[in-house]
Length: 445
RNA sequence: GUGGUUGUAGCUCAGUUGGUUAGAGCGCCUGAUUGUGGUUCAGGAGGUCGUGGGUUCGAGACCCAUCUUCCACCCCA
Image 1: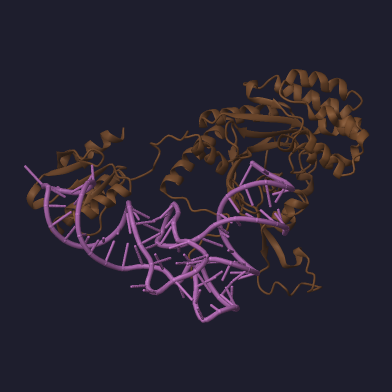
Image 2: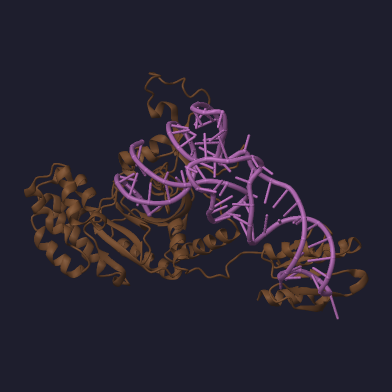
């Protein structure tokens, strides 16, 4: 059998794990700084929990898990089985829906507003591309149980804080679903909001003409498209856009509310310069109801590296009414690609061992191993080479596992001193047996 | 899910209009040399040419299928 990892999945080696952990810790620190509590949920959920939350396209991309045992037994029509008949579980597609399930299930013991962060992999049965995997790590922060717009402000500040600490320059696109509804309302296409926003969302990619032809394809009339046209040109300058929108949408109370919400938020964030009001931003996940966010890295063409927004009714699907939430997500895998592309990762973050004990003589084995035990007990990372073999082999090994030092001790020849060699320079020093631990503890400081 | 693309030693790739025992560099292993590794030298292992069919006297090269890769849609982190 040929060894091969499954489509759209990857293995991470020493360097990659070290780098990922480095960024994950920065994110965790950011979440904690904003007072979110950790939560972990199972990798799979009941299929009903997942289905119908992400739109038709989302349902298709959920990894379904076959029923245990004879999974065809419960199928009524074998020529056309329903998905729920043969699969009763699915791998989580995002972290927001499992979170909503958790909140609904545990509403009695949670005090609201409840803030949690969650760093776990999610799975999508998508066709892989660069920056698009079938298993990837999401890092989410959500707060539920309050309608306060201060939470939108905090979410944007959290984004700024986190990306600043990571050192990745980004732009945060913001919009509000209510503005999109308002536009649809004043243009008389309220019943076709989704079709309109899906087309508008592509404007950065296909341009104004592309959006128009897309709308024509979807049977929008020329008059309707003419009315919608101002939305194609709203970009960048936040104040001007808000001023214009207030006039344009004055016939829609929902639209006006959306603008006011947006205005409240953009006026209060700590670093408004990384915000971009982007009326074309729609986001496909259909549970969003208010503010929506999407983060893009500057100077890297890889799609969004984060997204989120306000959802008013997500827990209602699980029976818990009147719980509004806001959440944001960091796409770790894409963030890593950006950092690698832009060469922004420090090179001193590899988590490797401090010292390899080189074996030259079986008679010294016990003494060598005692050295390893003593160092380990004091927090030094030690690799004890298991065999007495050629030095070249042992040195190569030490080099490869990233050790900074090797120790050579032969009790017959060396007696009470130990040779400590720095791998990078090749320099060596002799250290008295009693001083060895002190030497490495000093290095660690 | 639709359309296209890729696949030769561990890695990066050569391989001429289909024609004998499929090559290189790097890496790996062994030995020598270097005052106990990183240099240099010599030798060696390793590929049913992604997989399965087909065309042909003959296929790594052509055809079909399938898997994988990357790209564009779709959608998204």
